[in-house]
Image (tube, rainbow, N blue to C red; front, side, top):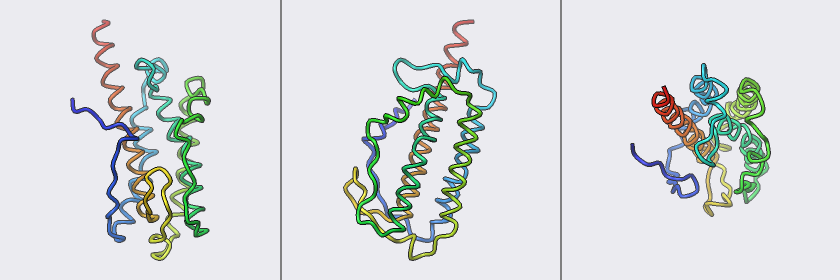
Length: 179
């Protein structure tokens, strides 16, 4: 298996042409369905099982939900023409404190779908001028456009969906050995 790059070590190249906006929006629009598909039919035991001290599948899903507020706040920043985008909590305190494993996955998935739908609804109403507005991304220390922000969200989604797939494969192998 090819090792995945840690999220905070990722390098980004924001060079998408503005004409790709609709494609990138479709990626983020589809994340709830992909997340639901990945977690469908998994037992609570598998959903909440950790790989050492790393987040469980359910915690990965909860983390995606936890960041929806940040993504929306950054849309507010672009709309208000703020020079710098709101910073993320790099310690992920919200996810660590949420105890997502104690809640039903159905609630996490439903709330994620609801919040992501609102995020995409806003994007669907953006015109070309707004899509090209820029703001300083605080962690990357580079100016990004709205389209770059959406690409960043899509990449973050895919990072966690890939980890969920990885955990499913790992736990399936472990389960097979335990039989």
